[in-house]
Image (cartoon, rainbow, N blue to C red; front, top):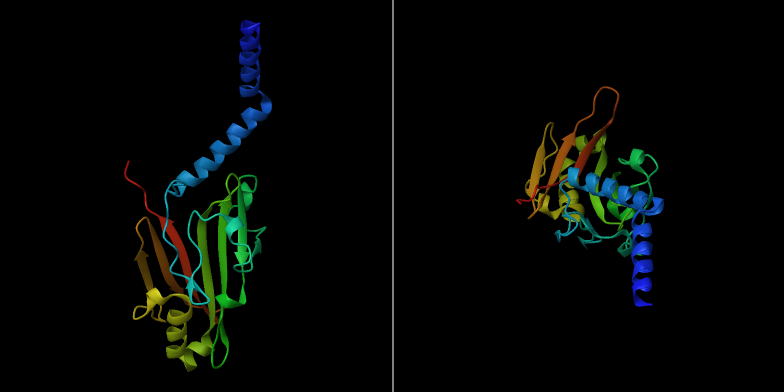
Length: 205
């Protein structure tokens, strides 16, 4: 009786391993892993929180799962996100939460944050954003803008942030780099943009 049981068990395992569903799942996960590798993202690494502050403190880290974000800040799916062509493997999100923007004495600095997570474990692996500033505000009161961005959003930029053409700055964490840059308006725009994006460092094997 026992030999027959083992034969049935072996056949069952073989069928499961070679079933169309199993093969599809394996291909699905391989595609996800490929996307993560191209970004130098390691799901087994613990990453430090971003320098971006929300309500006075760090609130988001690479490799954090999206289900931990509930009741922290407002966000929604982004149908036109960075990985919209890979929607079966990656979910794109965006946030225009009020606390990502800054109210100035006159006018405001308006922010939008983008992030993406894999469809396997919902791990956040891509984060970027930008903050839009009216040219008139920069002309009238640049010091307040610089002070408030460094105070409310990115304390790491204190003493480093400048509102000038081609300004950029890199802040290195243990295993990723935060890139900051200023985009100045052309003849068709009235707004400056502070861009932010993270890039993972390739780990030594």
